[in-house]
Image (cartoon, rainbow, N blue to C red):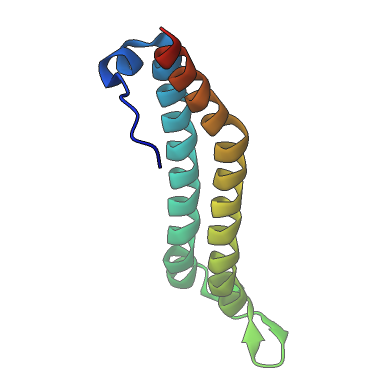
Length: 104
């Protein structure tokens, strides 16, 4: 890590930074809402849709158990999606903003 003098006030005032912040905030809130809804489907399903969650899929494994385990898969998918978007888009935008600020 280099010890560069970064003008944080200039970055904060940059319209590109504000656009990046807004874009990232909307994306993160969307992912958070998706994960929260999916998470709460488990207790709601277990309470109100017991017949669905009791359906045997294979041996002693039922739909409820598979749904509960799918929460781990969904968490990893959300982390992967965020990582891809951050690396491809957010980091490039941030680097562009830093380069503009240092060049000014």
